[in-house]
Length: 263
Image (cartoon, rainbow, N blue to C red; front, side, top):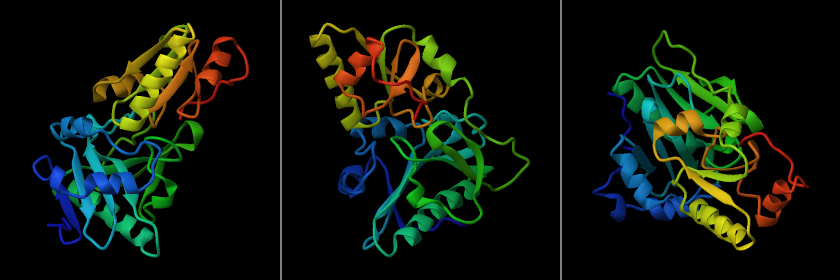
C-alpha cells in the first residue's frame, strides 16, 4: 500500500468544517481562491479528494477522477486529475509540494489509475509553476497563454491526454455580445461576475453570465484551460478577471480591449 497517510489529513464532508481547509485556502494565494463551500460539497459527491499537510507544514492538494475533472482535458478518463495544489512559502515549499504530488500519485496507484495529470500555468484554475512536480513528470501538451498539461504515467499503454483545439469555435458559438463564463468554484470570481453584469446593465449594456454547471459541459464548452473566469465579446475571448466594465465597453464598441487567447 502506497498511501502516505502519515504526511496528510483527509478532508471530507463530515470533517470539512472542523478542518483548517478554509483557512489554508484563504491564506495560500491563488487567482481562484478561496473556493465556494457549496461547490466543494457538490464535488465531494463526484469523488473529489482533498489532502492537507499536517502541521507545522502548510499545503493541500485536490484531485478527482479524470472523467469528472472540472478542467477541459481530452483523454483523461483513466487518470486522476489534480484540480489544485498549493504549498506554503518558505524553505520547505518545494519539499511540501513534492509531498502533495506524491500523495495524489499514491492514491492513483492504489486505485488502479493509469496516470496523474494536472494543468499548470499562471492564472485562475491552473496549478502554479512554483509548485512544479519535478522529475518523473512529462509535459503532454501545451495550450493558450502558456498552459501545460503535465503528468506521470503509472501504467500503460495510455493514449496521451491533451487540451482541446477548438477554442475559437467555442467562443464563436456563444454568439454576439458580451459573455462572462465561470465555473462556480470561486466565490470571489462568482461575485465579480455578478458585479460586472450589474455594472454593465446599469449602463445599458447587455451581458450574459454563462455558468458551467457540470464536468461534461465544462469539458466541451470551456473557453480556456483554466476555465474559472473568462470573458468573450462578439464570439472571441478578450480576457479574464482583469477586465473591468470600461474594458468590456471598449470591446463592445470595437475599441481598446484586444482579443486574447483564452487563459
